[in-house]
Image 1 (cartoon, rainbow, N blue to C red):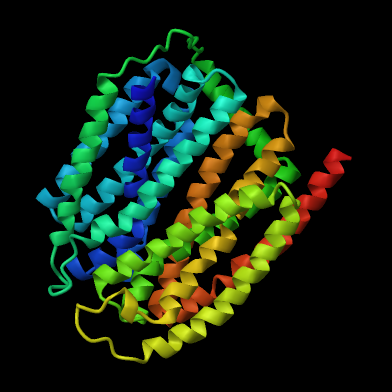
Image 2: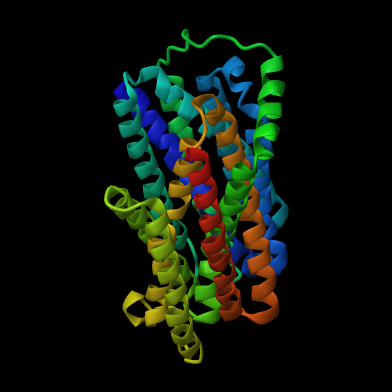
Length: 412
């Protein structure tokens, strides 16, 4: 049992690193391959659209393929894509990598979530393991920035030395593959499903999406992920181009956003025992807006100062480089809170289709956010691009209020 749990942890860490490396890769392909910001932003689409499409179609068929086999296929695909990156250094291989990562993550997520139910004895054990699993995911996210930064050559901005990171990632994926391959997993309790079930689930999902409460939720989730991914994907580029930090430091300091997001979700777990989700999220959004108004003027001052040399370190960085990523602390509770709120508003039989909608529209929001931020960044500059986060923050204040009122009417 311990061997299986370690295998699932390792699977999630591999994909946490690959999924959250988009912002770093967006920064690097601009200098290594001469790609524009707008063109680089499509990497988000290659990742998120494949997650959305494969998640939409695959959920009902993973049972027939088998959970273990699905995870092995996903790990093998990712391992090969990682090995291809340094062997064929080009923008097209980068697109292929993220398309592969997106499709593979859809297989992994569905399979891992389903596998948990095979070895947990009750709801408490299930919830406990899920929390540990998400903790491993955040550990992977935070390690991403330091792993990639260790291979970046600041002295030669156009160098492709950062691609050596993918040999390490291929090794981790290979280790995860071998561990899972040699780990027994009893799937005998899984009942085979009729082929029509997949079509029924898709139809159920579409019918559910037409409900007014669910429509408002979809817009809310879409808007949140649009904002979060726009900031997360472009923070390394903001640090380098606007704050004039060296590339490796720009990547490392983006880890503050991941760390503050993890801390924000942990603290929200305790806070939600005392206050309602709506009150907490309203406070968080107002504070997040205030942080934007506080940090970006400081960033403007820092951008006018020349940065000397690649030996520039954490202690030399401007206050804005530390302050703006703390927005993660305040926007972090929004996504899990609204997901919990919508699921608790629906009967259990609709949780499956609703989960599918969450994955699909979250992926679409991530792609849209990255592309919009890229266009604003390229046309008006980094400061304007991040000031634009005030638009989704304002929209979320309105959408969350509307969602709460509709949820209250249904409960009544």
